[in-house]
Figure 1 (cartoon, rainbow, N blue to C red):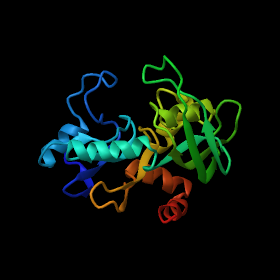
Figure 2: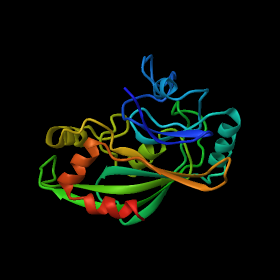
Figure 3: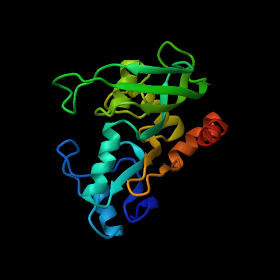
Length: 238
């Protein structure tokens, strides 16, 4: 299946990564036979180099370079934290208007030394649904715009789990009861984390480039059910 290319020129390509598809071969994702980078190589001529990564479960903007030099320059921007990364997430509970989770995280093995990790967020919309679960007659959820300052392994998912505002659809760090509720009532079978917008300085022109990935049918279904369309439209132009 062809990938949706959001941007392409002689230096780089930006692809809309589908949820549930691993970016590349890795010991962390197992022995799949279908990867984003392999699909992309079938669509785009020449050698390709991943500039950054997304988790298998996460959808959205993925940046790929067409040469080692371009990849190195984009990597430098990422290391200097000059790349703007904006995600959309749905979490359990209402965490408040805005905030920053400053909590050190270990690496991909979930062991070893802790490194600084900070995730900024702001609340776009909330909903309260009249579905009883456990000791609560109603359930609360929030739509967040999330901007990770650092880039640790599964940082957003782990940070919001640490804050007890678990991401919906997170089968590793989330809450199974809330995930089941979304599957039953809204046919939601994916992690509600979307790499929505990416901003970087073009390595050749030095102009600021901003690329945004559209929301898939699952996201649109939840947005319509909760009346979040206006909040998302407002965030898109903000």
